[in-house]
Length: 364
Image (cartoon, rainbow, N blue to C red; front, side, top):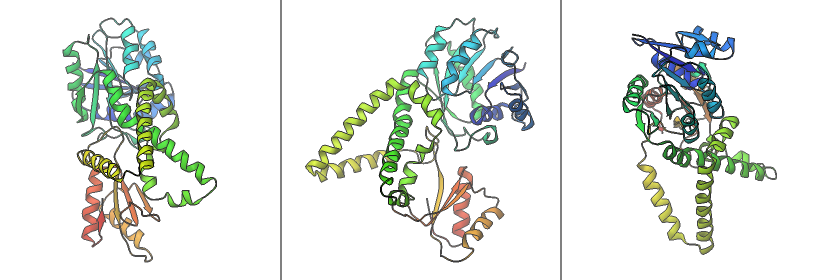
C-alpha cells in the first residue's frame, strides 16, 4: 500500500522533507506550487515524484499534507484545505516557527476525520529555495510536534514514525509552550540583534569608524539581523503577545544593567558574566537549533602572495566544500586573520584535519 505525501511549497524546508521521503519504499511524494515553472523545477531536480499547480489534485487521497508556506500564509492554506475533500485519516501538519495561532485556527475548523498536528523542524540555512534543499538538513536537529489534546495518540505516533526518515530528534510539547520557548531563544534574539545593528547604523551616520571596526566580533554576534525581513515580520506579529512579555522582561534586564553601572557594582558584573558563561557552556555546541549553527574555522596565515589561493585549492583537491572565505581586519574576540565557512559539519571537521596537516594553527 502506497502512502501519498503532499508537500505544499517545495523550498528549502519542503524540498528537504521531500528528499527525505522520496525513494523510500511505499512512499510517493507530490509537490505543489501555484506556479508552473516551480512545479516543473521540482521534478527536474528530482526532489519529488511528481508535481502539480492544482491544489485539489495535490491533496487528493493524500495520507499526509505538509504545509511549507510562510507563517503569514498558514491559516489561509488551512481554510483552503477545509473546502476540499480530503482522505479520511489524513494528517495535516506545517513547518512554521509559531504554533499557537495555526493550531487554534485548525481547531476551529470542521474536519471529517482529518487531523492537524503542528510541526516545527528547527533547522535552516542561510540559503533558500528548492536549490538549497538537502536530505541532511534535519539530521540531528530537533523537530517539534504540537498535537492537540483531542488528536488520537496513534495518529501522532504514525507521524513521528514517518518523520524518522528525516533523522531528526522528535519531541512533543503544547503549542503555547513552544511559542514561549522559541520566542525566548530565537525570536527575541532576532529583535535584539536587529535593534543593536540599527543603533550602530545610526551612530555610523556621524562616525564611519563604527562600520569599519564592526568587521570582527560585532558582525558575528549580530549575523541574524540579516534575516529575511518579510519572514520575520510575519513571525513576530504572529507571536506578538509572547514577544511583548519577553520584551518587558528584557527591558527589566536593561534597567537592571543601567542601575549596576550607575552603582559601579563590579562584583555584580563579574557574577553575571560567570553565570551566563556557565549556562552557555552547557549548551550543545553542534546540535542544530532554532538559530542555525555556523561551521567556521579561523586561522592565522602569513602575508605572502598566493597563500589564500593555495589554501582554497588544497580544500578543493580534498573535495571539501568551502561556503565562504573572509579576511578579518578587526580581530577583537575573533581568533585568526582568515575565516573559512562551511555549510556542513562534516566539511568543517575535515577542513580542520586538512589545514592542521599542512602546519597551520586552526581555531574554532
